[in-house]
Amino acid sequence: MSTHIGAKAGEIAPHVLMPGDPLRARWIAENFLDDATCYSEVRGMYGFTGTWKGQPVSVQGSGMGMPSISIYVNELFTDYDVRSVTRVGSCGALSEELELRDLVIASGACTDSSMNRITFEGLDYAPVADFDLLRRAWEASQGLPVTAKVGLIMSSDSFYASRPELTSRMAEYGVLAVEMEAAALYTLAAKHKRKALAVCTVSDHILTGAETTAAERQETFGHMVDVALSAMLS
Ligand SMILES: O=P(O)(O)O[C@H]1O[C@H](CO)[C@@H](O)[C@H]1O
Ligand SMILES: O=c1cc[nH]c(=O)[nH]1
Image 1 (cartoon, rainbow, N blue to C red):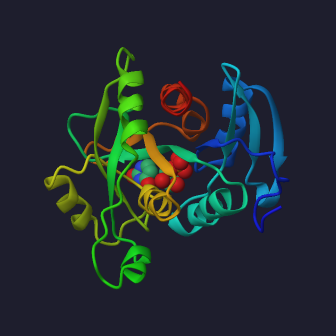
Image 2: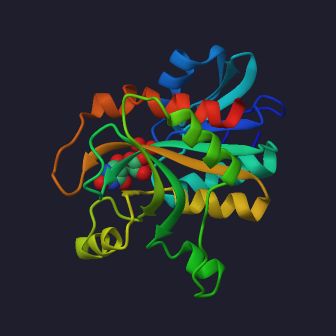
């Protein structure tokens, strides 16, 4: 077992879906996987392993923010030899071309976090998605009843931004949406030579103020789960 994940060796599949919300992890296990069993309840951050179309896959909650996802991703890569992690998250749209429930497939993640500035001693590292996962996610998204856009997102340390004008600056430069984890996930995947992708559903619109309910955030974001599973396993 690792420090924060209560799984024994071999209990976690090589490919892992990672929602921020542990209850979304349970919902994914119950509704998308066959024969899912819970391997960890440590801190209520559920992890499950089952199969999808006969292939093993796990789903592990990450918690909110880059310090939290970094703990789980580090342990998945170093203690459980996980090969790919696909985040399935919610995001706030910054683009007029996005509506509630649309998908954002993040080719790269800008960030206001100090984590990478410390790692790279002030240089600006550019965290990017694995291209194969990205390409397969894009292909899987075609034909869905919602729009899927590929592009940059912003991974922020703050849900309640103290300087929202800086988020607007990101939007001016084409950043599609804001969330709180992808930059750390992509950076850790690069460090450990593993694959990572973030597929996010628009849960609220920063420009219009439109938003989904908490229940929807937990349970109605199935398109991104289908896209993520197809990208990792098909
Ligand atoms: O829905 P999840 O995956 O938690 O993602 C988004 O929602 C949380 C904020 O409400 C942050 O974790 C953000 O990244
Ligand atoms: O981090 C997030 C997630 C959803 N919506 C936001 O505005 N921010």
